[in-house]
View 1 (cartoon, helix red, strand yellow):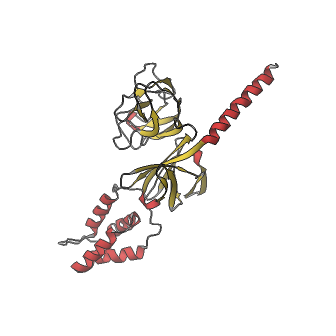
View 2 (cartoon, helix red, strand yellow):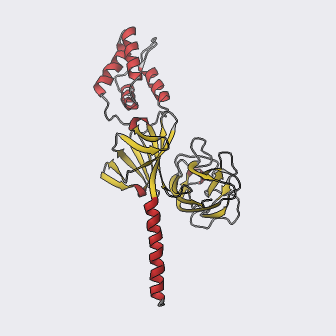
View 3 (cartoon, one colour):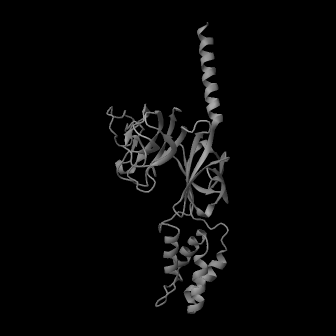
Length: 329
């Protein structure tokens, strides 16, 4: 057979296999809620409508790694909120108490309005009262688990190192979960992480590790739960690519093998700074995956992925894209 024809046929078969894999893969959102809950479900969303200062974008979902939602005032009656704040600030005890309670029952979108009220030139702290705008603000931050320097814009992280500031235009997200179809309201969401899973093989999926979250040293969501159940002695393949910049390590650029600033990673099997690691089970042994891992599982449990670094810094940037395949038993 002519070599060119043979090469073409081999290439066509490979493309056919990739196409079949792509057809079987579905998009999954892992949604972190303001009450601390985490929900994972399949979505039919194929692109993200994202409004920026430079125009509107329609980002293909394959190009999106994660979205952190800011606190915006969409749907908030600002005049009503300001009127209630005036009553808390200047009203008699009963009127201030009633307005205080009404504000506490409102959604997270009122927080920027309260902050603006507090920082206005005309505001003066109310003394000797059980009800004040200062106290209301502190309670709201605690209730919604918000830092004082919260963002009002949404942050979209691409599969590269880019972070785009703007507004993700949606009211709620529909998810197909193990417990049925649910709709999650925007106001209740902190962040969304995007992954892809082969619906015909529960042991396969494509995941994105974000350096500004998925760090071993991050005690709050540092390990990405793939949802893949690995059984002892099961064959596992992990392939990874991408670049991350780790602020705690002089903002050096790392690759999944632990390579830094363009140099290859160490050959040692021990985890090194910036490399991709995994564990099986929440308390499992941390194992170096690097950019390529092929081996058998030492125990049974859910597969977790992370980037190796003991110090977490939210200023980290970049993403690793990780393909996991666990052979069916």
